[in-house]
Image (cartoon, rainbow, N blue to C red; front, side, top):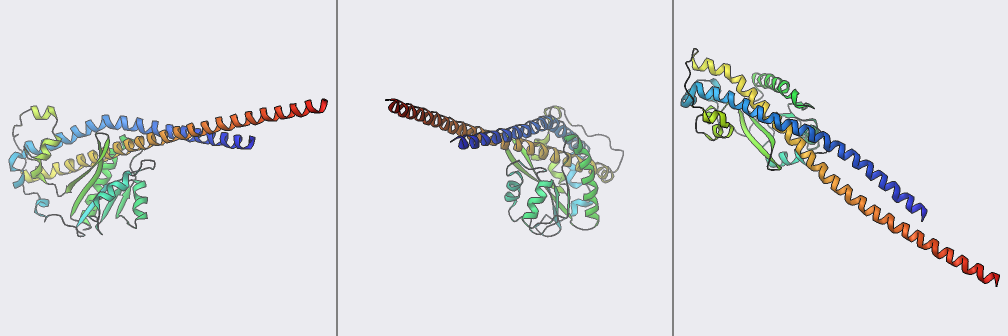
Length: 303
């Protein structure tokens, strides 16, 4: 009986230690998610300002700009279309990456694939998918602009090598306490979607920019040349936005997974404590019976 009590006590200690680890992971994820939530608002405003610059410069004439990427054919599922996926960097985030990959189904096919996220890369390897290029997600959100710089350079390099002509961007953002997949065309830029009154324009506008009337500025450069100079800024802004939303969503998912794990640990602790209490009660009862039996035997012998 005492051996069983020692075994149950050891289980309780192990579960408590696991609970400490879970709470530590949850705390780190909470801190990162909290910082990312504040920075997401800033990067959304940054993206809106860059897009507003394009809209202000070209207005309803955006679709007529002569930027060379506007002449590309619509995207298809062949090798000319690449994919940029933001997946999980670390574990303990539930099915964060799996949900995003499953939602794409067979859309990826054998297309060139670029991946951000070390954990997501291992999941792709288990599915026998090898990306064209991969990189880790920064461990802290201030490293995201540098990641966007790297991505911009790599994308330009892959385009120049002819690995793809179009690029689809897929990431997860956290809305209403749940992950939401975001899928948009990154290249070529769908500039007409930035025109005033378009869904894209309405989605990224902030109250500040919406309240301020847009006036066509005086252009000192030919529209195509100006658009070429704004082109990199627009891509960089969208990459920062996608990376930071993915970073925040992963940590929110990790918090949710750790909260579920903590609840399970509490239930297991309660069960072990109940079992330990029952074993102790059985031990005490057995000792009382043994003492009582010993006393009766001794009394009979003295008679």
